[in-house]
Image (cartoon, rainbow over all chains, first blue to last red):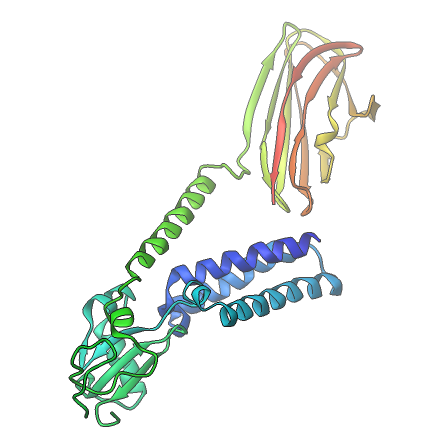
Length: 148
Length: 187
């Protein structure tokens, strides 16, 4: 019972934390992000199962997280208004080759970040981009002018 | 490249707007500007939580309490706020102002409830129970001498809540000093 309760608290705390950190951290694995993920996992495990080394304890912890993931995903699907809160919404970061400054700042992106993401998609210049949309996953989708 | 009007009615200079993207909402952030304030509010709440942690609101920094009587003084140095799983030490220092012939230290059950007692040094002459409390017989403490008792614990992970952790010093049957204390264990 205790593990299930701790699992629920940890799940929602992490959900809130990840949403709060912003989607930039979701998509990238820069050195600091990697450190954050490793420390998060280690710190959370101790609080979640504590000194319980049992198989039942592990199944309860993992099961709780799994069920909550299914519940939030179903709520996301069923209630569109909740989706905005749970997943966020896409945001336009480049239009017609020009970064949308306020959106780029809001997502703590630099022009270098945008250029790097564009290069990964085989686009050498931001000028060639018709639209770039930062998705809720943190990935940036690019639509080239020539594709449009 | 098309030059038609967007769903928002504004000219679309570049290309068709990607499906399900509404410029007013996803570029101009209409109706979404407050979202950043929610995020900032949560960051502020988290910062407050961390600050409280740094200020020892959730333990486990020890604090000292000293109570004096004509016969002796008793100093208890231990944390009052703990968290599941942490190790901590409680140090009892008895200073005898007069001869204490048969020092007895009585601890309320909160000192043992869901706590693992790992070490007790020096080992008391005797251990027992008095009306449900723990009783340690420490023996003779000559006037002017100190007696230090170290107890080391670990908090059980499931031990959450508040409980009494009183300490009473006796000389045989005579009550010399009483310290009232409560321990709070956070999850």
